[in-house]
Image 1 (cartoon, rainbow, N blue to C red):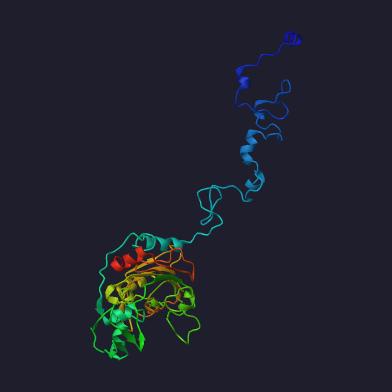
Image 2 (cartoon, rainbow, N blue to C red; image 1 turned 180 degrees about the vertical axis):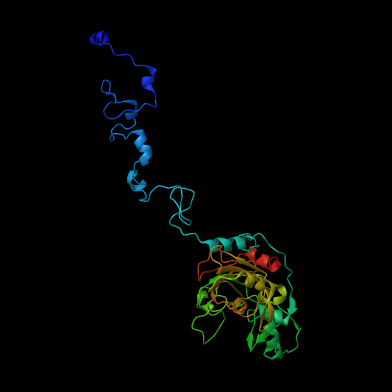
Amino acid sequence: MEDNKRGKRPRISKADYSTSRSFSDGDRPARRNGAPQQGERRGAGRNERTPYGERREGGRPERSSYGERRSGGSSSARSGYSKPGSSRSGSGYGNPFKKRDGAKEGMDAMLRRKPQVNGHYSDNDTAPTEIKEVVRLNKFIANSGVCSRREADTMIQSGVVTVNGEVVTELGTKVNILTDDVRFNGQRLKGEEKVYIVMNKPKGYVTTASDPHAEKTVMDLLKGCPTRVFPVGRLDKNTTGVLMFTNDGEMAEQLTHPSYNKKKIYQVVLDSPLKEEDKEKLLEGVELSDGVTKADELEYIDAHDHRQLGIEIHSGKNRIVRRMFEALGYEVRALDRVYFAGLTKKGLKKSDWRYLTEGEVNILKMGAYV
């Protein structure tokens, strides 16, 4: 008491500072010199803190959501878990505004395993070719852009081709490309500059050089091409994708004749998921009206949607892909050719076309891509 009267503070033992000691609201020590107690420093400027024991019993006080703490943020509560397919801006989950296209990724992966003409060779990549003055008549006709060599043989036998004024019907006849006068139905044929075009065919166009009954043909999309060309192979009216044009009948035959086994890859969308057992049947071969046909490769290109497939074939039969799936009870809802003998539609929008470079043409002539 004497010490208190003289202004001295009472001594407090170490036990008085025990961390296990708790104070009720009535006997909590008062602030010294206006300074907050140790437990109050972190909460400066906030409401009075709840005692530690009560905080543990009632859980953490409700925190404001992420969007309320930061203006312009998401209004959803912060969490360490995100739903499948969701993404966060600014993180490694990708662009939240761009929908993931699993089928495109799967199709691109399938194409990366294949050799491609597009973009891999320049005009400096050349293949030496022998210049011949004397060639077979059917080859001369094909090189003039009239038709393929097989079709030229039919025209020769029908008697509509003349050489130097005389009708020629014998197959295997040879002509001099510089001196002989070759005519088809009275019109002289001349060796034209060879043109090679690749197009991304849209839906609704018939693949033909001329058809009076067709409302729209692929030739309508080639208005800017001054040279007369014809489509190499055929795509159905409702099939889209890679289509080549040329006036080189010899190359056209090499790219379409079954004996050359040129590969074609299609992206397919079915009306229902393809069963695993049906996938094996397509790889082993299915019976069609014109014989057994099988897929060279067949893949699910979207792990979450087995309606979407990538199929590789070398057969050139009419509507072959659609008929293969129809034989097993499936309907093809969409069909897009993404690969043809090394050519792809890279960089081409629907209806767009471009000339092949000299390097690309030489690679095709070399037959490097099957």
